[in-house]
Length: 126
Image (tube, rainbow, N blue to C red; front, side, top):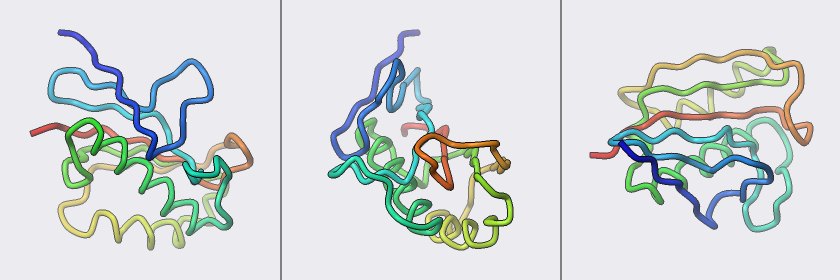
């Protein structure tokens, strides 16, 4: 089985030796996404805005791979402060309103660029 590298200008460019996403068979694995605006490369302000932008970035990567958010089966979410969980969860729930994926959410010691949230997903392509 071979892997296909996924890249889109509608999500922040990889700034290191990693890919925005990798497709293997019918599965897509994304790199963790911060709340970076792909047009400016800057972090948006506030936890809720960062959560929404990170999820929009993930949606763009999935779309580039031929998938969509409804096909996400697992998310791993990193919060700079677990006390932000309720606010984070409110935004997250809008993106996964029905049949939500399995999820792990942990507090990270620190995230790149002083971000408040980072999210990665595993999804399938139909």
